[in-house]
Length: 275
Image (cartoon, rainbow, N blue to C red; front, side, top):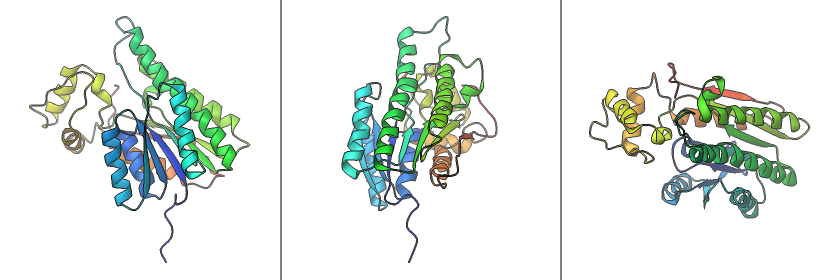
């Protein structure tokens, strides 16, 4: 008899799961046996990912939400618990970057980053702790930060990720007597649509430099086609990491015995871009 998948019988939530790192994490946790709830603003790609998980024998649900709304984050956790009776893994992955400097930046864009990268994550942590305590889970809260948090001059986006690191460390201390572990994951430059709010000429030049996407039209705020992203990473693997590698790191952390606290993981390519 083959052994059960390592996350069989467990419930996981992944925010920002419509693409990139969040999508890769959802697939990895689903393949490991978890009942995965994917959340984000774009239903169609999440439905496609949920279908992949189910075709591989797993279970998945999709919850469309604006994660900047604290009530919708709380409702997401409540929905997962209502359907499965528990919560074991909470992956706070949703985030965005507006790369303008402070002098020329937009307060509205700063607010978006603070609301999604920091406040949404805080609410997700709090709701997850309460749900895990209620069901007696040996749980894991995974906060996706960035190596931008390792630099002092990484701008407003970096400041939000410094905040994530501080929140993770503080929560880890608060939960030392609980059967809940806090994992802080800091990806480097990963081949995703993370840079969709960057200067279009920068993104287009980067695609051309790799030898793909010569005719790609780039509009600020819009995603690059999946085939361009998939072709880009193998050609630029010295500079761009793979989202699946981040997902594997998350799976490693959440499948350790509860007495093992994998506090921080950095996943980055051999050469680092300071984006």
